[in-house]
Image (cartoon, rainbow, N blue to C red; front, top):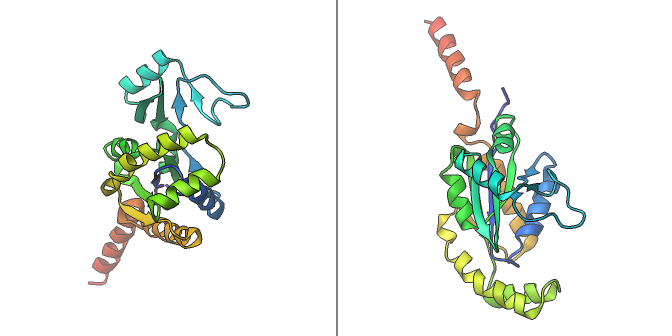
Length: 213
């Protein structure tokens, strides 16, 4: 039995708030962290590897896995299905390894309500302002103006669901936010439910106490 159970660490934010950067920093801090490899029905892009970048499934396979409860969460996005297979996550949790999820608020709710939801830790990343959010999207130079406009339109819908999350961090200073994120994860790892050997230890203490009578 592992000394502790793993966490399902859910990071969500509107695009441009710094979630991806913080996720990579978190994984550099603890190389034992692993990303949840999503399943999808879309076709592989050049260079993508099945089982590493995504688990590529047919639509029938995906629907069957959802129907049989093999997906922690799933969604239909731009004509394709995406989801988080439960099996690998369950194995990681029991082995004491944390799994990092990059999902939106709907995915957070589904994971929270799943069989593994009691091990979930959800964190929402807020930008310091909408103006700064737009500036970050524009300066990273990855998207055309019309794409940025769509991302900005979607951002408020995402921000409006901040109340679903265990923790909410305002990312106005990347280094400071990273430190807060590490503190949260470190503390949550010590939750009573995450320590399967505690009951055995308390039982041993009780037996020791009884023997002293």
